[in-house]
Image (cartoon, rainbow, N blue to C red; front, side, top):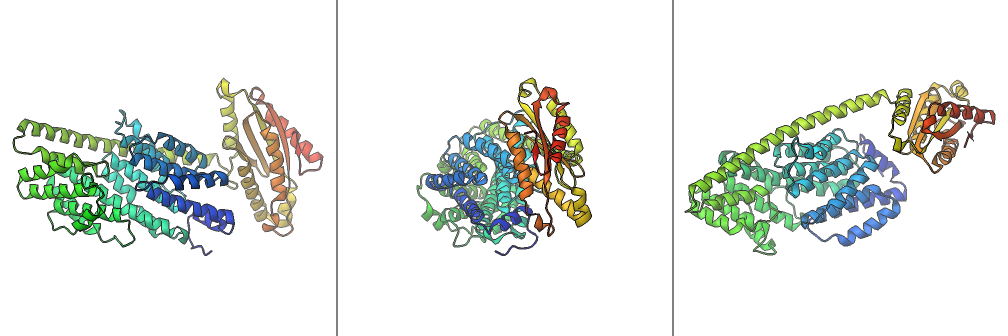
Length: 543
């Protein structure tokens, strides 16, 4: 398999793994699940979801399982059903995986769900917290390109659902660069489908914004917006586009043309042929709204009201929300409507518009604050990270023990395990192979330790060739078993890759005790380390 140069790190990792059957099967499953995600809003995906879910559980593909919950959420959302269980499962999986783009996707899905069920944001915008965090997660996210595109789309969709179109558009902005950047060609099929979604969503957002402007009486801005997007609507369509999507985009183009006051390039007959139920078809309803807009522009409010009344009450959730609101606005202008009722409707529309502007300003402020917080956390984290190994440093070790010391009484019952670790004969390694090799040894040991600890544990480099592992809340003897696994992992590592003839082992002292004895535990583990050295090195003492 040929890998392009300058790939993101996560793409390179998957590309390097592709030589193994399991890695290729994992990639195939990811490509398959993205196909299911695309189909979830138009087709019954129950059977393929169940089949792939069984494979994902057997193979331990947590990212595939997360995306299957995403597909279920989309299907439930489309059917007007409760998807909260799937959204919560997405969040749990994303937090465990630690992939920033998948976490952003889960957070944005949470915000989408709140917007879709018309949940008002609490005062202070606290309800927007998941969306704000999602935006910050995507800043320089090191994830698979298909994950990043999916997350940007979902974040944009959440902003769109809240009527915050400028913020939604900003999320779509980076996607063209992602599509154009070097990536593993394996993902081309998925990216092609995602590019279609980007185009359809961009048109949907622009149409919603233009109709919202017209609804509050700003027809000039609506005209300019529609005129800007009209030429872009149809050219990307190719024969391999899903017919239902083609019909929808032609309906969008007809609405853009009506708002812009220009001839329509849409194939109205194509839209009509694709209609499954003429009484409820969303695309036919949009064509009727477009005719009502034309009548309004021609100075015939009675005709506009008549056309709008015929479709306004049948427009479903698949149509941009302000298309329906504009249709209701036009329908309200039927002859005989009391002027005070029309004034009341204008006042409400204006209040809603101003409230939207206020929400957008608050959201921008919240995003800026979150980005500053994340930047501060990164800088603060760097103070606690060992530059050579990427593990915690001595300062992180001290801070970690202090947090344990201050833990709530209910969290202090379980034993604490501390492991003190030295590289055997490390001075000889430096003298014989050089300090560059010595640094590589320390880096690899750091990687091995990081792979052996749980998320709640700490692995740190204290200095030189001295390391420590702290395992809190250990009630089942995990620490003792893990200590032997660490020694074995180092002994069995292919050190010849670093330098021919290189052999590395470690000595490890482990001690278990209650948190109440925290001040004495490190010294006890250190004493066990010297026991391991006296007994021949390359072993565990104290387990």
